[in-house]
Image 1: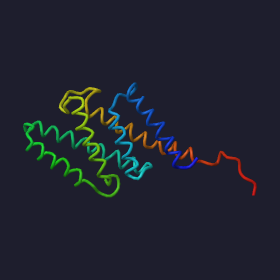
Image 2: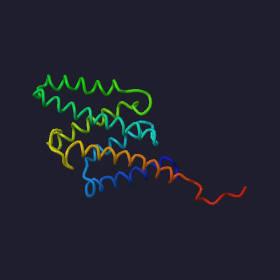
Image 3: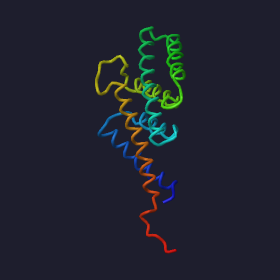
Image 4: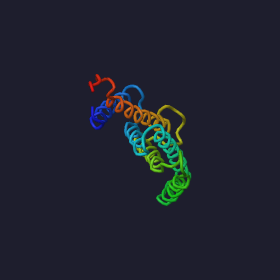
Length: 170
């Protein structure tokens, strides 16, 4: 099977499976899962892309969590939001360095996923610990999304293998 068709089949099947998993088994935000999945490819794919994406996503989650806490502590005015976001976003750029901290966009993906999940659930990052806490939900989605990214690459590669075809006589 051609690589393009193999990727189409692999990603399509796994995207459908991820919807079922998040609906019935591990209830995390599907959008955060898809963002993390895409980030694996955007970071270059493979284990290295997954490592870089996952690390920066987690750091983005941490940055957003601290930023939202600071906004709340400062009263939540538009000035507090702007000032805290300057610091939270700035930190994500400042920590960028070669290697595992080199995929800055994933930091912003993690940051945005927390903000979106807080907004969608109406649960603040300062809420008590639970499996429905926005940070827990997004960390779960990012871990799953990274796994689906790797699985889709693996399945796509498996579907393009030709060693199962009988060798042609020379």
